Image (cartoon, one colour):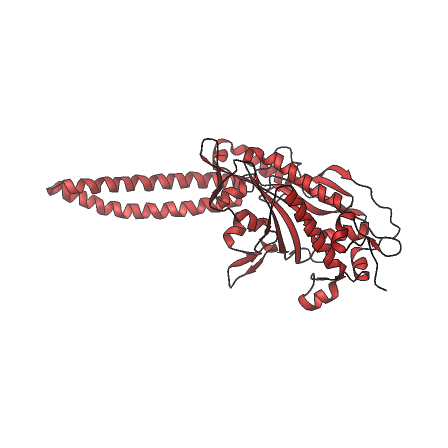
Length: 420
């Protein structure tokens, strides 16, 4: 949720953010109106309740006609208090709905525009010159590392098996990510993949992207699309200690996405699948530390990409392509030889105080006063990384070179040979 105090003081700032996102400014006006109506309803309720309490004290001291008049007024006030209480509750619920509808305030400096209006910040690494590159599925099938045919037989389209060196590659990559995170002071975590609705709503995933989420209706639980959800909710309704700097976690989990609306798009292989594994970084920090923390998470992602030796570029995502919780987002896109283009493999978002306000996560400032924390997230490794790893390291004889950092996880092998 955005800060209502900021909304009251500078609504035009919020409207400008909505225009950057390409979204309606009427949502801002709706929220302003709901805020005013809630405050008026609350004040009305408190006024009549105060009068009720005052008259209740007077009745005990009164007698005769005065007492009769006070008792009559007490009956009237009972009905007024009930009606005012109902109106205040309804106004509070209306405010919550309007508040949840407004996305985060876009960070100053984020590019304007939509999905194609990103800004390339840098390109890193050398694009390999491969004559007629095979795609990751051809390579994976030759190595007996990826089996989408049996994945579809067992579970349906967009499921797969990682077998043999495929499984070892993924496990090694994720373990390497956890090792790096621990070296940088992150707490390793294996998180729940089923969460309550309030956890999903608190992180902003029940808005425009709700169609992407699997829901278990019988249990009123959701399957997460990222461990960001569980990690964000870990400290919900708590006051956390940030006196020694940000609190950082690295969450390993299986993730689930319906990929609604992407039928016929990137269906080959493991680029867009319903289930995958991921290590996600998550930070709680003071709002004034969020910009620096965002750069730290981006640097962590680039460090991992360097370890698996794949060329990539960093883009500053345009405001219209940000999720509702993000104020700013940077993506790392790896080069995919078979497609002759870069594809997204990591993203890191600064969510400022948006998620923490929804989840009621606070810290104490230097005066001991509770303040809303900031939250940030970033991908450190995920199943999709197998695509650029296999494709960029393919050799003319059909083998695949193993990046040095991953060799210990594959029994010391430096080359993976296709099955004959």
